[in-house]
Length: 404
Ligand SMILES: [Zn+2]
Image 1 (cartoon, rainbow, N blue to C red):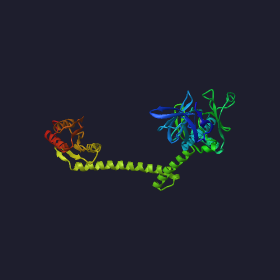
Image 2 (cartoon, rainbow, N blue to C red):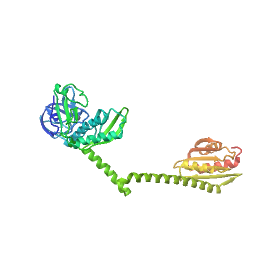
Image 3 (cartoon, rainbow, N blue to C red):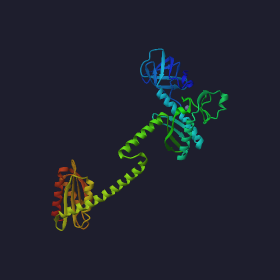
Image 4 (cartoon, helix red, strand yellow):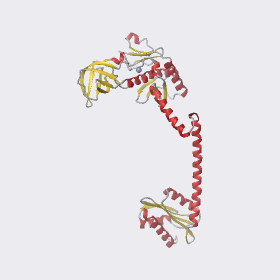
């Protein structure tokens, strides 16, 4: 079994060891040492990284049955005696998050009795799942306050293995999952947990504990939190965003909510005005088109091809034109390669637009359908749209509506 130096001293960053086994894992060399300060993934805490001599250690795994620690290497390691060096920045970050988790979990226990059912130390943020939902905002704030009070009090944090007799005497937050070799991590006078992870030596070293988010998951609540350097980085990032927005709006952050609300109201009002103006414009455009309409018997026929607007806008214009009596619309839309046709008539015009569209499509291609008073077609070549409308006009005038 590998001697686990990280149990005795979480601050050990360099150590001497001997290679006791060499093997291959996922096509990479891996070694077991007689002793190691490299923490293997477990208990919610990710593994350490670092170097054995000059070879990078990529992953560290624990064989649960043998108790051996496996170091996955980036390249071959030939020496038998090695110097191990940890990436301390990463390890210390894990220590801050992990110790912070013990404090926050106990803070929830004391504030609302919520038990932590799982812990995950992530790349960017860490989470605990609490056996309670929902958790009101006041309780979240109270737990955060209590956790930070424990930080400010800078209480000692110690870790040691217990004898079976001692186990019964410890007021564990949660009963230990194992029955022997129980390691107690104690936040003096506050929290007693069975844990094999690496922790800071005092609560002050954890730094600020910040609840960054909560998410309800059925009967549980997932609390996302940041400790120490991560909390500082989060503060910086958010302040950066605020400064950027404030510079853009040339205002102070305190008035941002008020300003954003006002901008939103103005935007909505402008949208309403724009919509109204568009409708008025469509009405006026309809009138202008009617003034230039061709006369077929008693009907006013509006024939035009549009390429400068969306088909939906052409259809909308047709609708406005057909609000008038005695009107037939033969509108076309010319797209980049295909065209569309909108053929319609007022309620008092006895022509069949569906039949007209069928006749036209028979000549220029494409297809479509609709009702006797309004038909819509598409799929014909874009350069035949004008021709299609001319044809429609001819059919309409020839039949004078009667045969259509
Ligand atoms: Zn722990």
